[in-house]
Length: 278
Ligand SMILES: [Zn+2]
Image (tube, rainbow, N blue to C red):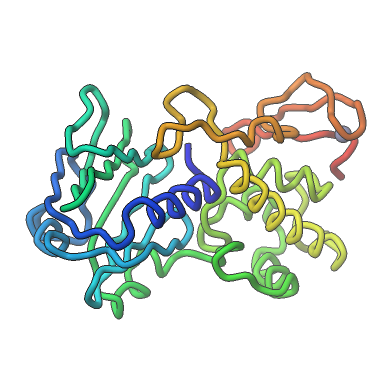
């Protein structure tokens, strides 16, 4: 279940592993993964024989800059991941949606058991107008903004709950249930607080917590919640050891020695410390 830190880890690995390489072939065994193209062949044609110069990211989208004015946009979505193989041999039994093979050295595969991984190629000029990219709100790592700007964004929905706002892609890109719970814990704020109830000091604390929590998670390589939840080189992330509330209901709060609570919020579990968060 990738969120922003896991996708940023993938972007950095793609940059290290395959930036500068030329694409030899593209295979798209998955259904529904190619969007904005008439056919899979159209996506393939726009990638093959081109070099990927570098990788950027917006929210959960990785953006490979091609050696002309086009961009290869690819996302693992809410359920997928990337896999790097050093040879072009395709591993058996994996839910491969798309494979990009390079002229020198192996492949990158996009895996997804579900149907959330997507990809397309677009001109650099049209990228910002593409609905999936245009609809994204601020990216706390890619485009840092002053905390007061973050406050203005939150206050466009004064009565909404903080956890819902953090997961609203049109406000903040790339956050899901795990990091929104962790960010709120570090900010000392309950999931059900509203922007209109926040002081300037609390908004600043929330923004700082968001940037610091995400940065720390990237440093640890993100989170791996099960054995298939690994980075593209097969390594698990190590941020679990730093998790304070997510899926820790009934356990002791590391800060106050109270008990972590779990509640249902918007049909999903939310985890928080009733003593540390108010
Ligand atoms: Zn506590």
